[in-house]
Length: 67
View (cartoon, rainbow, N blue to C red):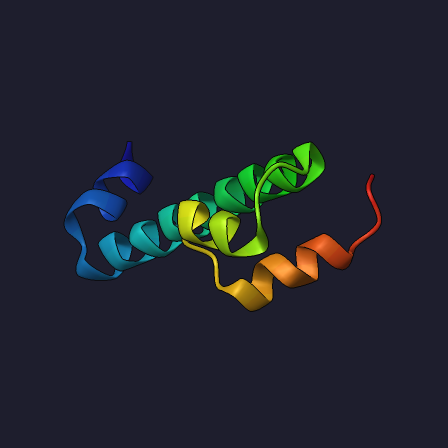
């Protein structure tokens, strides 16, 4: 409860929570990009536009071996 209060009411806590949420969002968009790359139906530009990732980030993901 104390940690939750800190994250909701303390300016530093709010900032920390926003940073964590942005990181989680980016991780999710990377997962979406990887799935789109595996489907092979979209251009790198389309994937960047849909996910909000930069074209360079999408290119790097496309060059990684499939897991």
